[in-house]
Amino acid sequence: MNFLKLSLMLAIVMALAAITLSTNTSETSHPPPADHQMPTSYRGTGRFLAQKPRHALTCDRHPEICSTRGSQGPFCCNKKCVDIKTDKFNCGRCGKKCNYSKICCEGKCVSPLSNQKHCGGCYNNCGKGNPCVYGMCSYA
Image (tube, rainbow, N blue to C red):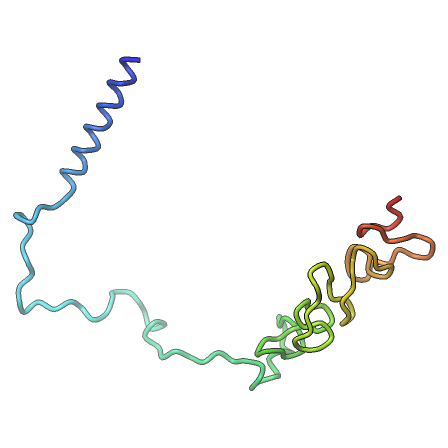
């Protein structure tokens, strides 16, 4: 127990000594000369930051960007490229939101917990005679 107390006290003294030695006192620091100016640019920033800001291309003015490779979808809704067949916030048309427990499949809001054709996810068909219960085919 005494060793633990001694170690704790030693650690506190060392921390206080480190803090005291690392801080500059106002007596030793000198103010910069009156004619000294701060640099206006940072060294090594490069020309990228020096360029004028470019306006982002949005699909409301350039709808062709939604048909490019890597786009989120072929349709433009609220200045964003979306796929209205699978987007939960633009299901079937722009602005049509699916309820909390539903997902968007084929442009329609469906419940993956009980829908026979979209059981557990889009296009997961349980088949004839197998019910969709809790998002699983033939649960019981």
